[in-house]
Length: 102
Image (cartoon, rainbow, N blue to C red):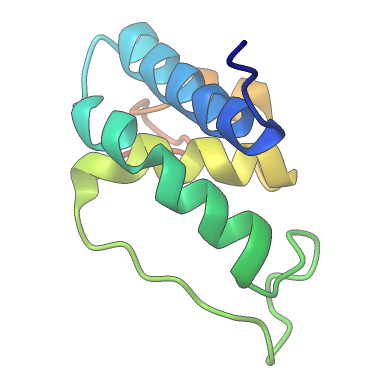
């Protein structure tokens, strides 16, 4: 019997959230998010030191993601940390949104 781990399920949730945001916006590229969900989940859950409620803390880790096409993945993982709400994700690629894409 093949049981998915919590880590696998979290990555799957990132994929679902990213694809849903792109679909709702009718704009964007979900491919990068589909492929990168595993690494971004491990990075944020096991390596980076940060508090989504104290983003100005000077000793936090910083992660720079260059490919703009992967922004749905980054917004999705940050929603799982509490930085963004589901409503924020629903506003992906909309004017005046906190999740504008690239």
